[in-house]
Image (cartoon, rainbow, N blue to C red):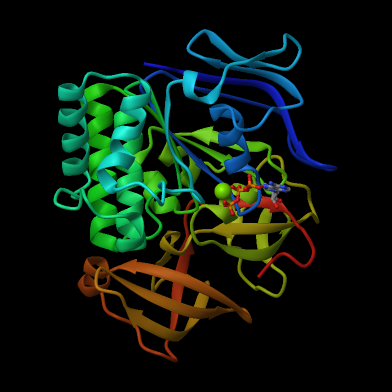
Length: 359
Ligand SMILES: Nc1ncnc2c1ncn2[C@@H]1O[C@H](COP(=O)(O)OP(=O)(O)OP(=O)(O)O)[C@@H](O)[C@H]1O
Ligand SMILES: [Mg+2]
């Protein structure tokens, strides 16, 4: 199975540098998620990997095979890199039937007919598209086309599969099934998978490791899901992955206060400066009700979401969001609009104040 290594690659469109000295290693047989805001360079990175774009600098290795090097003038053709790919904007050949689409990479690799038919049929079965073999893409829904594209990627390579937003057009149930299928394939065959998405929940659910890209294309953090959620490397990661509250605070006499708060919200950390202004970041699930606490919030609204209650509350003139697990909520009490209750903040993070960014 193929591990992947990007070494100092730089990609640009005209004057627009999208990736600058970008390095990343994906280990053999892992599922690496790449998440980042729209336009940060995720698809560009995959174009470079698959051989559809030539980086200005750097090297790309598949296992230990150099497939691209700007300085050594190595550029292995896309079809010889052995990567199965589902591109976000380009799903399937419009003029080929479902069957021919899936058989296409196998024909190119001159796989014997009997084996080709077996593998294509199996791949269509995996994506629940058996029975659609004769359809043209124009006769399929967007989600069905995506599933054909996934089937084609599955037969293309046992080594490395790259999926760029592969399930955006699917309904929740099918998305769940495709994720389970991708995970199963990875487990059975040990294929290395790079999974690109905006959908952090899907990335958290599927991936062994996740790389978070910043808007300027650099990687802010690589880690397992728990690292990213619980120990975000910086403010961008904290904000990008999951919902967050930011509360402007100030450090006084070794304690942390909100600007107009009478009671401290926390004890200052050793590296915080006296008089320093910070933003306290806290996730909605880490604000817990505690009737004994001096820190009071007033409930503005409450919504029941099946497995949780979502509260919007006022805290010293600022709106915060609190999520409360439904079982926990019912074992205490569900609070009502207008009630004033104590809260505690758990797992807080502090970031130097950025004016205009606290909300
Ligand atoms: N062919 C192109 N010519 C010029 N600029 C391009 C081209 N393709 C992409 N770009 C620009 O490069 C940047 C990165 O694009 P890219 O498609 O890699 O982003 P992305 O992270 O995949 O975004 P999304 O999440 O929306 O798919 C964007 O600013 C985009 O406008
Ligand atoms: Mg993209």
